[in-house]
Length: 300
Image 1 (cartoon, rainbow, N blue to C red):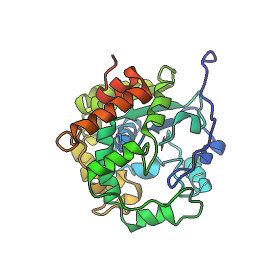
Image 2 (spheres, rainbow, N blue to C red):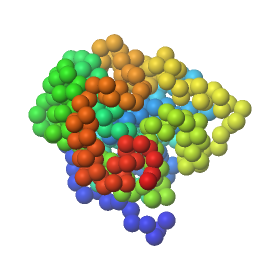
Image 3 (cartoon, rainbow, N blue to C red):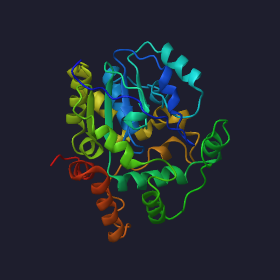
């Protein structure tokens, strides 16, 4: 593994959501699992899958507590460090940063899951629209805010999409920056790239590939239960365990956070010219091969 050129941290990212400095003093364990996504791309689903593989189909796992978002501004870094240090199981935590804004360990395992940006925005709009005052307060009123506060979104998902595309991910962060950075290191031996559409179409196959990548033996006698616990219906019914703080930041609670789990909801609403503008920009920002993968989950 010494022959590989490992990614290096080259910048800090701070915003209404991020504080990438938390990575600078993180003490890795050799078997750590880092789940990375843009946002609304299957993060919670991947956390559930990994928890079920590690714990062999166990019921009642508090996945949101077990698998923290490392670079979120809240809670403070020392609280995150203490929580991770106290964990005795194999750790699996998440990030929404591009590769060059975090510290990369050659010994940890990284799983990056991505989704077509149009599907991301349709899910993100629901996430943003149903966020309550507690959510806005946590982001805008916690000391250390960098950049402007975040406000209520445009009620029109199409207008929301246009602004997101025009302003490179506003009011969150850049999809192109995020995807391209992980795509560039997809050939490293400790990185696995997964597409949301493929988990939808062949969840069991993807789960077995993840288990193999993580070197987790599968207990075949328990496989049906593991798979059941990773299905949308089970996760929706048990959402309070998978969603941060049990869903208290969203109107309707945790079940609002785990929304539809469907792709293509934009097809009947997004004007053709806006859809094409997105596709053209994807090719410009990501290159043909990566843009095609992000759209389809397939490699050309």
